[in-house]
Amino acid sequence: MSLSFVYSEPGVNSKTLFMNEPWLRRWNNRYSDKEYAYGEQPNNYLKEQLEKLEAGSILFPAEGEGRNAVFAAKLGWSVSAFDISIEGKKKAMQLAELNNVTIDYAVGELQELNYSKQFDAIALIYAHFPADIKSVYHRQLDQYVKKGGVIIFEAFSKKHLDYISRNEKVGGPTDIRMLFSIDEIKADFQNYEIIELAEKEIELNEGLYHNGKGSVIRFVGRKK
Image 1 (cartoon, rainbow, N blue to C red):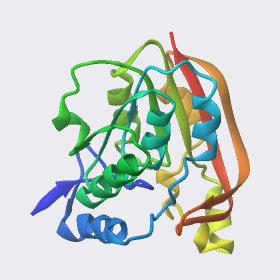
Image 2: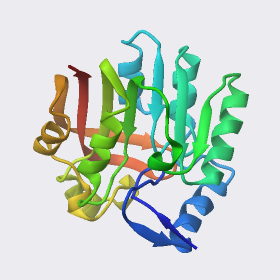
Image 3: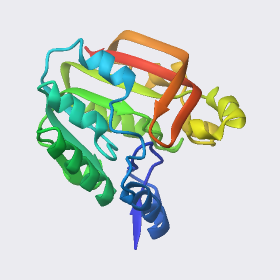
Protein backbone atom coordinates (compact mmCIF):
# COMPACT_ATOMS: atom_id res chain seq x y z
CA MET A 1 0.00 0.00 0.00
CA SER A 2 1.16 3.53 -0.76
CA LEU A 3 -0.35 6.92 -0.02
CA SER A 4 0.21 10.56 -0.78
CA PHE A 5 1.62 12.62 2.07
CA VAL A 6 3.04 15.82 3.37
CA TYR A 7 4.63 16.45 6.74
CA SER A 8 2.29 18.19 9.14
CA GLU A 9 2.13 18.67 12.89
CA PRO A 10 -0.47 17.43 13.49
CA GLY A 11 -1.46 15.44 10.37
CA VAL A 12 -0.29 14.87 6.81
CA ASN A 13 -1.72 15.44 3.31
CA SER A 14 -0.52 15.87 -0.31
CA LYS A 15 -1.34 15.96 -4.00
CA THR A 16 1.66 14.49 -5.79
CA LEU A 17 4.09 12.77 -3.41
CA PHE A 18 3.87 9.16 -2.31
CA MET A 19 4.98 7.36 0.79
CA ASN A 20 4.43 3.78 1.86
CA GLU A 21 2.66 2.23 4.80
CA PRO A 22 5.30 3.06 7.48
CA TRP A 23 4.59 6.80 7.14
CA LEU A 24 0.90 6.34 7.82
CA ARG A 25 1.71 3.95 10.69
CA ARG A 26 3.89 6.65 12.23
CA TRP A 27 0.97 9.02 12.57
CA ASN A 28 -1.56 6.36 13.49
CA ASN A 29 0.83 5.12 16.19
CA ARG A 30 1.33 8.64 17.53
CA TYR A 31 -2.38 9.31 17.68
CA SER A 32 -3.31 5.88 19.05
CA ASP A 33 -1.85 6.71 22.47
CA LYS A 34 -4.35 7.70 25.15
CA GLU A 35 -2.68 11.07 25.69
CA TYR A 36 -3.22 13.74 23.05
CA ALA A 37 0.03 14.26 21.12
CA TYR A 38 -0.39 18.04 20.91
CA GLY A 39 -2.73 18.47 23.84
CA GLU A 40 -6.46 19.07 24.04
CA GLN A 41 -6.32 22.87 24.10
CA PRO A 42 -6.33 24.95 20.91
CA ASN A 43 -3.28 26.59 19.46
CA ASN A 44 -2.93 30.02 21.12
CA TYR A 45 -2.72 31.99 17.89
CA LEU A 46 -5.74 30.26 16.40
CA LYS A 47 -7.70 30.92 19.58
CA GLU A 48 -6.75 34.59 19.55
CA GLN A 49 -7.79 35.04 15.92
CA LEU A 50 -11.04 33.07 16.00
CA GLU A 51 -12.25 35.03 18.99
CA LYS A 52 -12.04 38.19 16.86
CA LEU A 53 -14.25 36.81 14.08
CA GLU A 54 -17.95 36.23 13.68
CA ALA A 55 -18.58 32.49 13.54
CA GLY A 56 -19.18 30.97 10.12
CA SER A 57 -17.84 27.96 8.24
CA ILE A 58 -14.24 26.87 8.68
CA LEU A 59 -11.98 24.16 7.26
CA PHE A 60 -9.07 22.57 9.16
CA PRO A 61 -6.66 20.68 6.87
CA ALA A 62 -4.38 18.12 8.54
CA GLU A 63 -6.34 18.40 11.77
CA GLY A 64 -4.93 15.41 13.60
CA GLU A 65 -6.60 14.89 16.99
CA GLY A 66 -9.04 17.76 16.63
CA ARG A 67 -8.06 20.24 19.34
CA ASN A 68 -8.45 23.27 17.09
CA ALA A 69 -11.57 22.04 15.30
CA VAL A 70 -13.32 21.32 18.60
CA PHE A 71 -12.46 24.76 19.93
CA ALA A 72 -13.92 26.40 16.82
CA ALA A 73 -17.10 24.35 17.16
CA LYS A 74 -17.43 25.49 20.78
CA LEU A 75 -17.41 29.07 19.49
CA GLY A 76 -20.30 28.27 17.15
CA TRP A 77 -18.40 27.68 13.91
CA SER A 78 -19.59 25.09 11.40
CA VAL A 79 -16.47 22.94 11.30
CA SER A 80 -15.06 20.71 8.57
CA ALA A 81 -11.72 18.96 9.04
CA PHE A 82 -9.63 16.25 7.41
CA ASP A 83 -6.49 14.20 7.87
CA ILE A 84 -5.13 10.91 6.52
CA SER A 85 -4.93 9.33 10.00
CA ILE A 86 -7.95 7.34 11.11
CA GLU A 87 -6.52 7.32 14.64
CA GLY A 88 -6.42 11.10 14.53
CA LYS A 89 -10.08 11.16 13.59
CA LYS A 90 -10.98 8.77 16.42
CA LYS A 91 -9.31 11.06 18.96
CA ALA A 92 -10.95 14.12 17.41
CA MET A 93 -14.41 12.60 17.61
CA GLN A 94 -13.81 11.60 21.23
CA LEU A 95 -12.76 15.16 22.04
CA ALA A 96 -15.80 16.56 20.25
CA GLU A 97 -18.11 14.26 22.21
CA LEU A 98 -16.43 15.22 25.46
CA ASN A 99 -17.05 18.88 24.64
CA ASN A 100 -20.61 18.32 23.39
CA VAL A 101 -19.94 19.66 19.89
CA THR A 102 -20.19 18.28 16.36
CA ILE A 103 -17.47 18.40 13.72
CA ASP A 104 -17.50 17.03 10.16
CA TYR A 105 -14.23 15.09 10.00
CA ALA A 106 -13.12 13.25 6.85
CA VAL A 107 -10.21 10.86 6.41
CA GLY A 108 -8.46 11.37 3.08
CA GLU A 109 -6.71 13.94 0.93
CA LEU A 110 -8.11 17.27 -0.20
CA GLN A 111 -8.28 16.43 -3.90
CA GLU A 112 -10.21 13.26 -3.07
CA LEU A 113 -12.70 14.86 -0.70
CA ASN A 114 -14.20 17.26 -3.28
CA TYR A 115 -15.67 19.83 -0.93
CA SER A 116 -18.69 21.34 -2.64
CA LYS A 117 -18.61 24.70 -0.88
CA GLN A 118 -16.30 27.54 0.04
CA PHE A 119 -15.50 28.48 3.62
CA ASP A 120 -15.45 31.69 5.61
CA ALA A 121 -12.08 30.67 7.04
CA ILE A 122 -9.33 28.09 6.61
CA ALA A 123 -6.91 27.42 9.46
CA LEU A 124 -3.43 26.13 8.62
CA ILE A 125 -1.80 25.36 11.96
CA TYR A 126 1.64 23.71 11.68
CA ALA A 127 0.87 22.20 8.29
CA HIS A 128 4.32 21.76 6.72
CA PHE A 129 4.40 20.60 3.11
CA PRO A 130 7.34 19.39 0.98
CA ALA A 131 9.02 22.24 -0.90
CA ASP A 132 7.93 21.17 -4.37
CA ILE A 133 4.23 21.09 -3.55
CA LYS A 134 3.61 23.45 -0.65
CA SER A 135 2.73 26.45 -2.84
CA VAL A 136 0.56 24.28 -5.09
CA TYR A 137 -1.23 23.01 -2.01
CA HIS A 138 -1.83 26.53 -0.72
CA ARG A 139 -3.32 27.53 -4.08
CA GLN A 140 -5.57 24.50 -3.99
CA LEU A 141 -6.84 25.49 -0.56
CA ASP A 142 -7.29 29.09 -1.70
CA GLN A 143 -10.03 27.88 -4.04
CA TYR A 144 -12.07 26.96 -0.97
CA VAL A 145 -11.91 30.41 0.63
CA LYS A 146 -14.86 32.74 0.00
CA LYS A 147 -14.26 36.30 -1.16
CA GLY A 148 -13.85 38.18 2.09
CA GLY A 149 -12.89 34.95 3.86
CA VAL A 150 -9.85 34.56 6.06
CA ILE A 151 -6.71 32.42 6.16
CA ILE A 152 -5.27 31.86 9.64
CA PHE A 153 -1.73 30.48 9.51
CA GLU A 154 0.93 29.58 12.04
CA ALA A 155 3.91 27.36 11.22
CA PHE A 156 7.62 27.15 11.84
CA SER A 157 9.91 29.61 10.07
CA LYS A 158 13.21 28.80 8.40
CA LYS A 159 15.01 30.14 11.47
CA HIS A 160 13.42 27.35 13.49
CA LEU A 161 16.24 24.94 12.68
CA ASP A 162 18.41 26.86 15.16
CA TYR A 163 15.83 26.23 17.87
CA ILE A 164 15.59 22.52 17.09
CA SER A 165 19.37 22.25 17.37
CA ARG A 166 19.12 23.55 20.93
CA ASN A 167 15.94 21.70 21.92
CA GLU A 168 14.49 18.81 19.91
CA LYS A 169 11.37 18.80 22.09
CA VAL A 170 10.10 21.92 20.36
CA GLY A 171 9.32 19.76 17.32
CA GLY A 172 9.04 20.68 13.67
CA PRO A 173 10.62 19.58 10.36
CA THR A 174 14.40 19.43 10.04
CA ASP A 175 14.29 20.09 6.28
CA ILE A 176 14.60 23.86 5.79
CA ARG A 177 12.66 23.65 2.52
CA MET A 178 9.57 22.59 4.46
CA LEU A 179 9.81 25.65 6.69
CA PHE A 180 8.35 29.03 5.79
CA SER A 181 9.43 32.60 5.12
CA ILE A 182 7.45 35.82 4.95
CA ASP A 183 8.23 36.11 1.23
CA GLU A 184 6.83 32.65 0.57
CA ILE A 185 3.57 33.46 2.30
CA LYS A 186 3.25 36.70 0.34
CA ALA A 187 3.80 34.77 -2.90
CA ASP A 188 1.38 31.98 -2.01
CA PHE A 189 -1.47 34.27 -0.91
CA GLN A 190 -1.16 37.21 -3.30
CA ASN A 191 -4.87 37.95 -3.50
CA TYR A 192 -5.20 38.60 0.22
CA GLU A 193 -5.26 41.77 2.26
CA ILE A 194 -2.57 41.25 4.89
CA ILE A 195 -4.00 41.75 8.36
CA GLU A 196 -0.90 40.34 10.04
CA LEU A 197 2.28 38.79 8.67
CA ALA A 198 5.26 38.45 10.98
CA GLU A 199 8.09 36.19 12.06
CA LYS A 200 8.18 35.74 15.83
CA GLU A 201 9.87 33.81 18.58
CA ILE A 202 7.26 32.13 20.74
CA GLU A 203 7.09 29.69 23.64
CA LEU A 204 5.20 26.50 22.79
CA ASN A 205 3.55 24.23 25.34
CA GLU A 206 1.37 21.91 23.26
CA GLY A 207 1.12 18.34 24.48
CA LEU A 208 4.08 15.99 24.12
CA TYR A 209 5.64 17.25 20.88
CA HIS A 210 5.65 21.08 20.86
CA ASN A 211 7.57 22.29 23.91
CA GLY A 212 9.99 25.18 24.17
CA LYS A 213 10.98 28.29 22.25
CA GLY A 214 10.51 28.27 18.49
CA SER A 215 10.45 30.61 15.51
CA VAL A 216 7.19 30.87 13.61
CA ILE A 217 5.51 32.71 10.77
CA ARG A 218 2.11 34.08 11.69
CA PHE A 219 -0.29 35.20 8.98
CA VAL A 220 -3.86 36.39 8.83
CA GLY A 221 -5.15 37.43 5.44
CA ARG A 222 -8.54 38.38 4.04
CA LYS A 223 -9.34 37.31 0.47
CA LYS A 224 -9.93 40.21 -1.89
